Length: 289
Image (tube, rainbow, N blue to C red; front, side, top):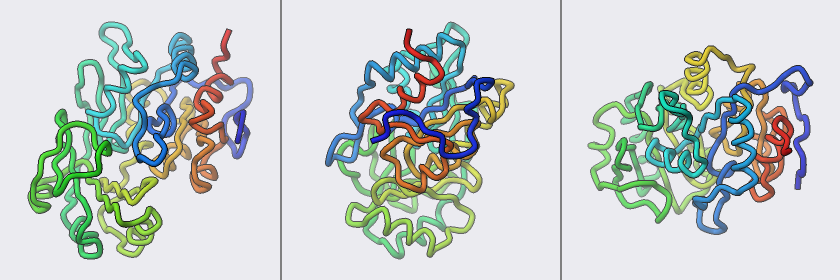
């Protein structure tokens, strides 16, 4: 257990530096995983809520950055009461950077798409029984078969795989409940998946995205719009899909339960999500009164 953030690399930790933008992963960073379920509880702890609002009160921008679809992220913004003043909607980086939107109301301002058909066909050749999903913005997902309960937010509509990837998409999810995360890491490395970037989740969950798209690229878009850059950003995350973000930010912080690869990519490691690790890190910059 890590009780306080500890320097693990070259992040900006001297007294002259102060975060101007706070980039927060959601699942495993803001929300706690439910044991043996594979989903997170839709509840933000008082400590994390208070720490985020101290940052807001100090004038920092708060940007949610997640692999979730936009539909699954505005609800978290509501939990945190991230509702800036009139005319200043929140910036949100969704779908691992493929979609950037403002909220409220939900308005997509940037989206990256790609032809996912070749990569999906290559994966299904090796995992023919895998589940496939593409986002249906504002509704939920289109899937080839139902996913395990709670894993996708919104409504799910059944369709053939060929129909799912017949047009360019911003993100594809491949899920195989009979495999492991390590199986998917090995498969993705073996296939190469030309023309596509990918990230493997905690389970046998593979996100396919356009080449060069990540949470870091989505956040780079936001910082340009705000007149900031990476050096102004404090980013906190726990998953493989946070690697680029943690390396890119002025200070990247890994949650205590993250795998070693994620911790090694970060400048510092904080407590686990169960120990309010995000609040521990934010308290360094915006201490409680």
